[in-house]
Length: 150
Image (cartoon, rainbow, N blue to C red; front, side, top):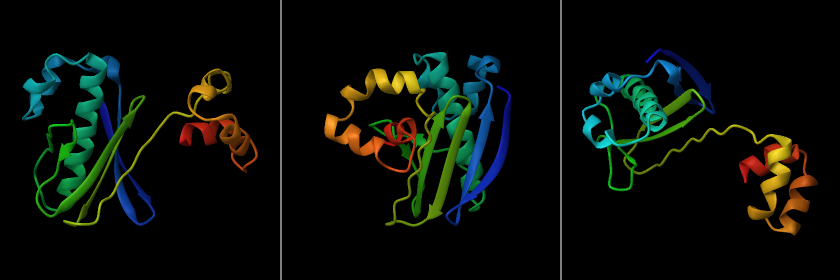
């Protein structure tokens, strides 16, 4: 799979970003992961996103002197080495990971594609109440951004 690694500094944290082209993904790419067999029956899109997320996490761990790829926990969560907290997120050709040395302080990231205006109007009633929708429309953010964040 074709990937590009870069760094983003946000709020004092270093986020490792992997941009990837899902069209270049092959099943052989998964062999890089120690836990590749657990993904054998996942859809190719899910496999590519998982791989990109673990690549980002491996870069983040290397920054702390750790050569590892987080395994998959019972609920699908990444299993971080002892004394490490981290987070992985992925969407539409981009995966991000952040890692900190901490046994107790959690860290979390998420990335989402902002909902298109038409889709936001179609689905908002299933996400927020009429009162909440009104509040989202009355804040400083565009409605599509506020609803996506919700």
